[in-house]
Image (cartoon, rainbow, N blue to C red):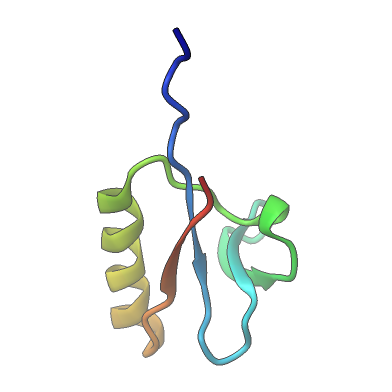
Length: 68
């Protein structure tokens, strides 16, 4: 019997097409070109709530992308 695959989500900026990540040095949100470097969420609800908060702060709500 196979174990269920965990779902993963990332956030993508609509205007640039880049994925969102956290810069660990400055603690700021930045765009990255690779999905592998993007901030990962393990629940749809977590990704959506962060996308809405980022949208309120930055003026553009990022898109939630399901990876698996």
